[in-house]
Length: 80
Image (cartoon, one colour):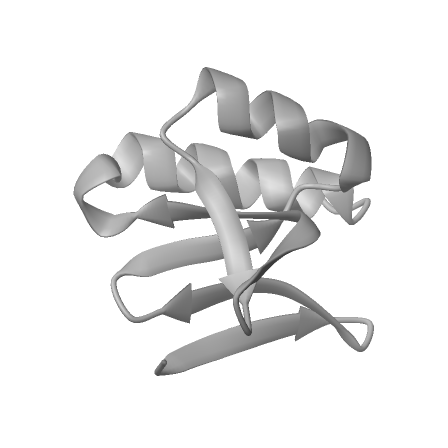
């Protein structure tokens, strides 16, 4: 797994891992994101990581990328 992560206040907020965008959406938002979007569970060492989702590259265009980044930032109390 190759990637690049971006941190806000010592917390990883968003990462690009191989061919997908992974971001923190929060524990309660995670389930909603998984059922209503192209998001898939973020897995590390074979286990799903609570509150994180990944969006495959082929599901992203410029508008959806901006939306996901804004969503991840909002869950950290930031605006973009």
